[in-house]
Amino acid sequence: MQKRNGFYILAAFAIILMLLAHFSGRMAATAPAFTFASEAREVYLTFDDGPSTVVTGEILDTLKEENVKATFFLVGERIDGREEVVRRMAKEGHTIGVHSMTHRYDMIYSSPEALAEDVGKCAARIEKVTGVTPRVYRFPGGGRHAREEQLLKEMGYRIVWWNAVNGDSEIAHADAETLAKTALSTSAGKGQVVLLMHDRADCTETAKALPAIIAAFREEGCVFRAF
Image 1 (cartoon, rainbow, N blue to C red):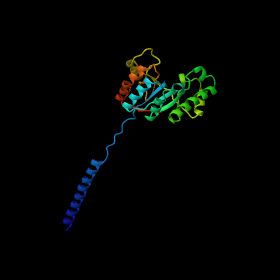
Image 2: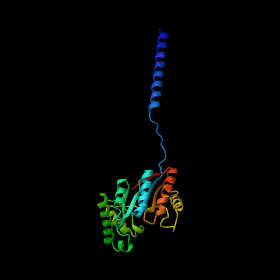
Image 3: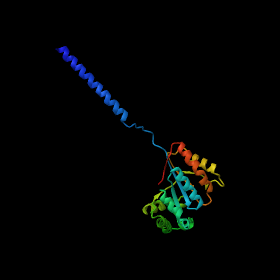
Image 4: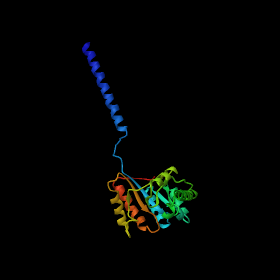
């Protein structure tokens, strides 16, 4: 009798093990697989001094084709006659920021009041055209003093600097290949890249270089962000 009971106990135990193996196998087969990769390097493509008709349009074409969002810091006076370009920026999901109304340093930095007025006029122009209230700002020429930074922060703006350039304002007569190489070399070793470029009418080589710049960053495993 004891031997028979022992046999039943062992048989029941074996059945339980078989059931556990069966269901655990099914769970393993249907459970999602998770991989934990290291945090991707972020690249912010930023463009100053626009809009222009041709160059900004070509840049927007490339960004749309590559499904990349960027940040444009506009000069208010240059919006006139290019309203559709600016509306396209907003419609396609890019961030629009204030650069200045005039880009004239002597006027902008003549006093805190002049700076605030310049910023306000540019922001109002952007909002009138797009319906979007800009909340990011880049100082023309990189800014001047800490008190100016504080003023912009009090006005509710996030100030955006840069830590890499493509060289379109630093290297005279640079071609697209040089600009792409400069963008990568000045970005090297930076975990988060804020790349300064320009979409003025004279920056045709920047528009030509942009596909290669995007492709190179993608090859490095970077992800693109807008502010």
